[in-house]
Length: 261
Ligand SMILES: [Zn+2]
Image (cartoon, rainbow, N blue to C red; front, top):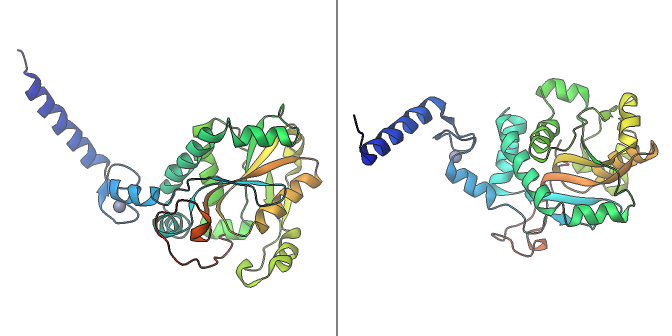
């Protein structure tokens, strides 16, 4: 029996809709049913937070590569990941950050490796760890989940346990810069079993949010004290004054935020 192309099209559409119905789950932001991680509308809103200039070099000795501004829907979706346990969101955000890395890797990433003289060393990704008590309470480390998705996309090697958090730190938002640094100086340790392997690489740290850079600096110092080269940090979001981005989607007031652990 011959099936006309319009009948076939109708049949295919019906099959896809039925499949979507089975695969659909509530969008973590608006609760509408969707077959993707975020519904198309929320996905668009989160992407409006994307930075036009992902690489920032204002922190001494560390390049900072961020996917978006920590505000609006991006801030909300990161909150859903961390505080409501929507782990699937890490897949979306980690992949978006991976895309930013891949788009820039022949530019800033290459330049930076040349600058620090470690061009021949392969890149390794080390997520910023949570203190074990905090991780047990949350059930996961959001930076590690993001790094897993990032590394699946970029094919870069992931060292999930390259760094350990050895001390619970005081909430950072109430402290000044030097107090933050002091608070964080002893917070990290290199995992001894991974130190040799990491010395053969150039490390890029990975975290969910970049605020003042105190956490990134402390983690990088800890690695460098063990003879490990660190080029920079990749984060999904950067807390930023709205007018610091040359093409902000919408002006809004900037409120300093907690160093988002
Ligand atoms: Zn939605």
